[in-house]
Image 1: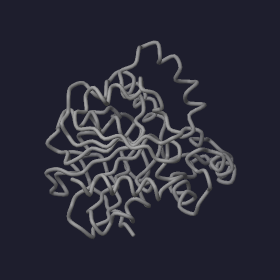
Image 2: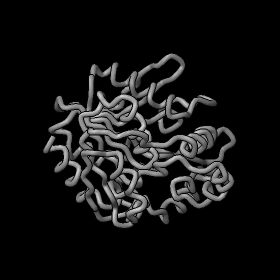
Image 3: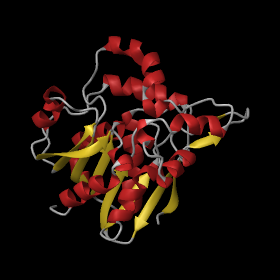
Image 4: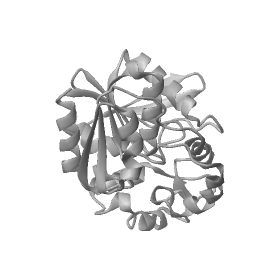
Length: 277
């Protein structure tokens, strides 16, 4: 089982889960509106071979939620500080969805930090046209990971919505725990996600204006492509094949949250890739 740790960074507290049974460093970055516990199955699976850190990125989970400061540059500064705190010069680094785009940008800026890079069904890797911002109100309503932001009159109402979402398909004990850990009762008595709207709004603006891949990278990279994921066409895969010169693409069962809905196949795929490094 992981332990929860807290790193104080100026006016920010960064909370993270740690599996500390081995020495080889592995850093796992969750997607938008999630938190570090989503890596629980993978962490348990790899714990005997890796020193695993799964942070709650700022604005998420148990980490601080400042009123602003949710650009990629802010998250990379947090992660650089976390690496320094751990005494890690580099690590195997994986990211999911928005966290995958964050990892790709970080790799472009600081490739020396990466022993390997694992991208799990990345989200909007390219820079998007400005008119796309007009679709934000619609996206906020339809994207599965934002449907539990709330407010809800009580926890039961929120859980009823969650049980019908793709990321909680099957509603396993772990999925239920992950959902519970991501929710809280607000000051007015309603319930909602620990992920906050200022973070949502600023992150979406940055996702649209910043390209995830801008120059060739030689880092050994695994692209995990779920069968029911976001990246299904050759056109979507083109940026990765263009910029990632040491790329391996593996298809796994499940949807965008393959590590939650089909964890066994997902864990085996990650382990197989890392074992070759």
